[in-house]
Length: 118
Image 1 (spheres, rainbow, N blue to C red):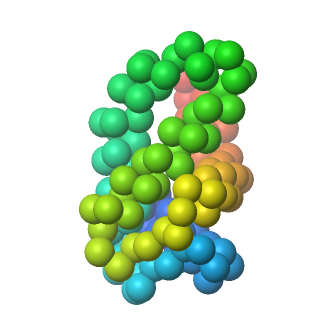
Image 2: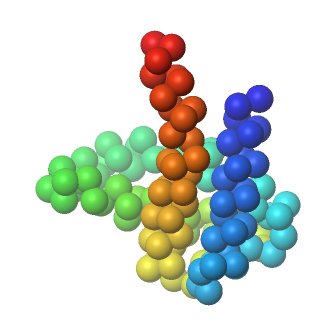
């Protein structure tokens, strides 16, 4: 149930950001849901591999290279999901940064509860 709620919340955030950012285009809310699911799958499968492969540069940049990885995942999702268009790398970087910030603010209480249960 939590996964479904996170997908819906991420979809709402992504759809809202597509209205704010002129370089990010999501056709419909259903497309936003598919984008959220694809991002969840890519973050679960591909992101750990990319982090492992780019660990030295991530270490040298004090973790800032993770934003580049996130932007690359956004660009990959763009190739997979029809109706989701990002106008370039910098728009993908800004989109991923804002998506991460807003998501972390909304999920903050959920993370606090999860840490308290451990």
